[in-house]
Length: 264
Ligand SMILES: O=C(O)CCC(=O)C(=O)O
Ligand SMILES: [Fe+2]
Image 1 (cartoon, helix red, strand yellow):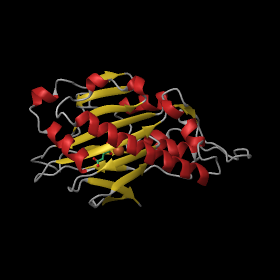
Image 2: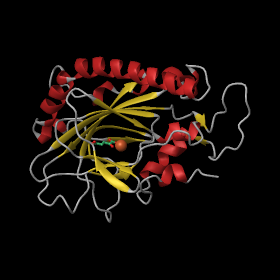
Image 3: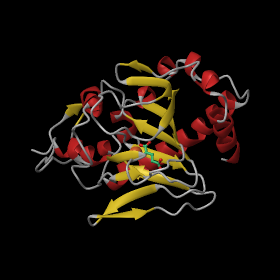
Image 4: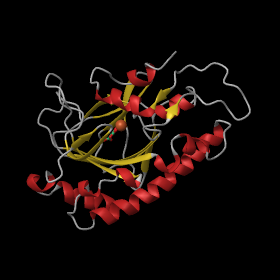
């Protein structure tokens, strides 16, 4: 994990011209590269973050040209980390599957098996003179199934619980695991995705390194009944994951509005 943090930091410390060699490319559903992400309209307050996005899997979405070639160890280190995180995420999916009364591999298959999208997102929140006026990342829940976040030692991630924002204390050597909206959907609300945001600071920059495990865009997902039973009352409408992702381009939606919009 130290190596991952080191190569990411080395990349972010490069001159802007070098980083901008792979400017964010807005492929439908698959942004990749370095730059600003969701801020497409001019009248909204910008999130104070630059992001580097690289697809780890499936191979067809990897777009190696958009992986930094500096520092030299970036690709190899991120590949190795990505492979380990995928193993961890699949194990967690298996355990969650079982706890929903499904076979171990059920959710992994429902999300597309080897076609599932595993995406690395580096968030870089520079120092900000007026941290009270901007957000690093606005309140949201992740659209993914599961998210694994590698922190640095700087506080900034906050989660919403009982209507209040709580700051997550970074623990050295620990990963943070977040449930995404797709787990809330397939579990018919038994699991809930975590609403969270990132705040910025005037004294120091902050970096987070996130790996999203998300369904393939063609996966059609809705509440899944436990093995051998019928779904009693589905509280969510099913949706194609690609259509769900498209709602992330809509700045109007806040917090958990996206998943709530699927409530029947
Ligand atoms: O920087 C953080 O701690 C949060 C990042 C995050 O929520 C995201 O990338 O979806
Ligand atoms: Fe997030």
